[in-house]
Length: 344
Ligand code: XUL
Ligand code: MN
Image 1 (spheres, rainbow, N blue to C red):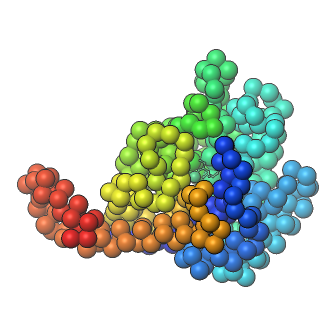
Image 2: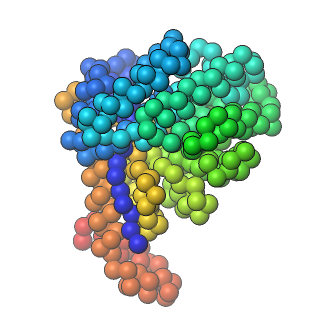
Image 3: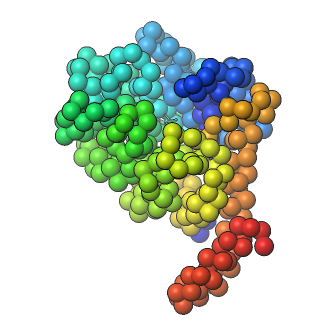
């Protein structure tokens, strides 16, 4: 029993370095030049927001959107790449300032649902059946702004629309507890699995677990993954790292807490992650201080750290560990793991 791992990231993971307090500090790299770098960095899969694939799609007809997405698919094939998922980017349009599916304004909800249909069309055209929903603005800054019972029902309705519109599509919710909103309606894996069960097609709703988002929720990422695996819902992951409870950092995988990263790798490996075609997504961001020429290192480094942790995990003496667990000698087990991580 072992995982089969192939790696993906999104074009946003090669980034100009802007943050809320300062402008871009690196040259913008055209999409096709980013694609040209994937294989050299060790990646075979591309994650997309709808408008990563079809920029300014709101100005195009549905037929034009599909035509452009088909052209992107041909470019992917030329580079030996595959599309992993498409995520509707519902958090940048001025209309969605106060939410998309959960906006109080029915015209905004209608826009969000139309835009989501376009994302499904783009997924089809790119040759993937997976649509990720990061519910960025589906929450509130103050509790009184929306009714949470109504809002959660509206998210279910929006998912039902997508599931009904395209019977071949699967949805993976990416939970996150906060940022940009103060409080999000679907903050954890448990919420995501539970809301999937409320839809018209629970078997076509799963989750995308991001390590940093779990940490922001005060939870252990590998336990969140274990919960999703136990429910048959871990359809993709966004591995990265996070230094405590602050803004979402998307740090290089393992760079804050190596043992926490080790336990994610070990769990995925123990449960044959990848056997059904699941990808290992790395949702990591280069530090703002990084210069242009080396601003993709966070991606290759994250993958290398994943594979090194995999090697460490597979080389641990399984029967000795079983014996220590049987004896409840967790101090020795702890030391064994620590020494392995320290390379001793
Ligand atoms: C936001 C986040 C997004 C999603 C894709 O925190 O992680 O990049 O992964 O929309
Ligand atoms: Mn993510």
